[in-house]
Image 1 (tube, rainbow, N blue to C red):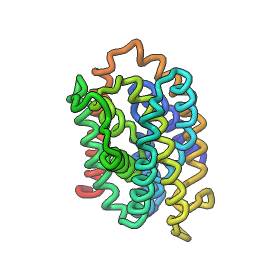
Image 2: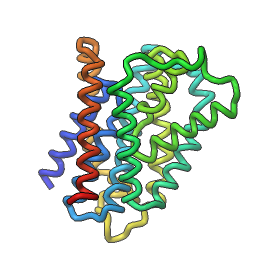
Image 3: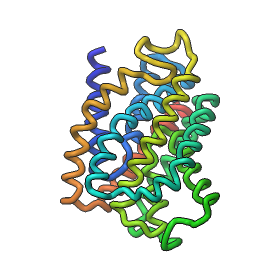
Image 4: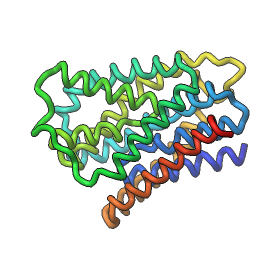
Amino acid sequence: MTILIIIFLFTGLLSGFLAGLLGVGGGIIIVPITYFVHLHLGYAIDYAMHIAIASSLGIICFTSISSIRSHLNLKNVNLLIVKKWVLGIVTGSLLGSYFASNISGEILVIIFVMLAIAIALNMALQTNPFIVSKDIPKSKFINFLISSLIGFLSVLIGIGGGSFSVPTLTMFSKQIHEAVGTSAVFGFFIALPGVIIFMITGNIEGNISKYSIGYVNIAIVLLVSITSVFTANIGAKISSRVNKITLRRLFAIFLLFTCTSLIIEHYII
């Protein structure tokens, strides 16, 4: 138990630091660590991946609040975009979490690997944003489709959506600080509906710890949240002093290594 507490406290330190340093959500770190820990504890793949994703979303519920407050104070949040996209974000999250809770852990691992590789390649190769328009679409339907897709894909792999929403907003000519701040708000509206669904649908009696509600492990949520709040601020301060392109490429390599480990775990060993 002591070792597990140390692992998840360290996970919070690492995920919070990287979130502040690179502007990526901590979920991309939290999910694979939580997953491998549960496999080591003897959980079946189905339960391990579902618990990892659900618990990551629970952590984001807490950590996003602090981030939102900071970005609101800095006036980085575009409330007009939030108003136009929040319904789609919530809808996508609800659909995605319900879909994820009803498919096998094997499929969830494959989805995580594919989307994580896409995120890693984008971080490694893109130096300047690709602009498609001077502003977000005027069509309510197109806005709903875009935001729903962001919510759906994000909740499938237990992240706050910044890896999808930030590039999307910069494509619509939004400055990076505005895109990151607005995405922080979306993170909360992705995570909260997802957590609720995973709590309701996580009926795995006999295969879950006493610290869990459905698929959400409350102990992990609290341990990771406690430490990530502190290191996120440190990472944010350091980020202004270092070459972000180099850092993003190094993180992309780390993410590809993580995906390789998942592939080896399931298809080679």
